[in-house]
Image 1 (cartoon, rainbow, N blue to C red):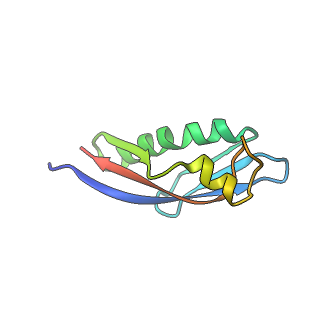
Image 2 (image 1 turned 180 degrees about the horizontal axis):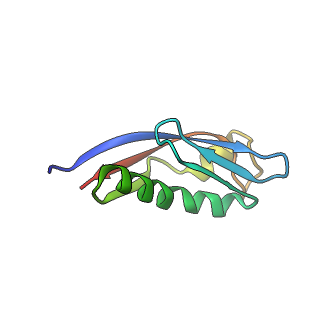
Length: 95
């Protein structure tokens, strides 16, 4: 099988308690939530990798297409050193 790449969009939303939530219409089953934005950001690529590897039946590699933390801070979702909500894109590669 040849290597193929796919662009995925993940939505980040601020929680009322200051935490962050992530989900994706592109990847059913991806729903993450954490009080600490940095912990959530660190979990997203691995969660995507596990879900997509299972769905595709082969190893997947997932990387953000940009600096997600900086983009979320710029949108005012969370204060600096936190995470702002918004949509972010990832690239997933099927091996």
